[in-house]
Amino acid sequence: MADSYEEADQLFAECKFRESYELLSRKHNSSTDAEYETLWRLCRVIYSITRELAVDEKKAKELEALVFEGFEYAKQGLALQPNTASAHKYYAIFLAEKSGIEGLKERVLQLSTILRHLRKATELDGSDPFAWFVLGRFYHKLAGLAWFQKKMIHTFTTDIPEATYEDALQYFERAETVRPNFFPLNHLMLGDTFVALKEPKKARPFLELAANQVAPRTADDREAQREAKALLRKL
Image (cartoon, rainbow, N blue to C red):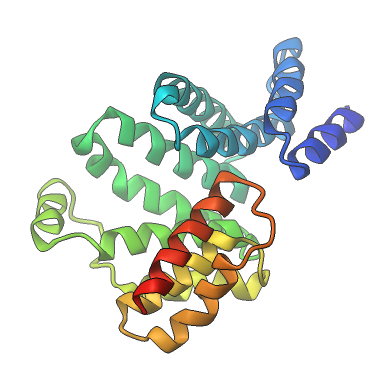
């Protein structure tokens, strides 16, 4: 059992996401009882695959199917381990992805639930930089909405905070403090947020880190590099 997890983790570390997914799927389907160690790993690898698929419009149906599959695993994982940080993190991630597919109204209605689980994830484990990153991105997206979009959100829900770029920045910075240089996309978001706050001098070093990756390994890495180069040209 431990060997199969070790192999799945190694495949994931090598960005062999499909191979890791197939191994974990076989393990999950051959077991009579759901195991949390399998479920969270399935969530992790499915999310990585969806990020790869998101750049190809022709893969939209496959992407959608994987998002719903990931949500089911996340839901099962949360039921099994309601006091585990990763369970809340992946439930929030896949609820956000699923509700985005289901339409704008559903996404807005789920915002408070998504935020509640992201906060719970960081409360239960403050050492997970990716959870802080996702929380930061949640606030960054809210802060960037036009006033009429924010008004629409508050029509459907009253427990969403008035998010600011300063809020987003503190979470991206917390992620970087927890594990420096863990994710080029966090460098991009730090730079982008400093640009939004009209602090280009503080933005540049982070954008350069994202832009100057020697060998981007994933779709997220490539997105970070592409977007950082575009922002640097505007500074």
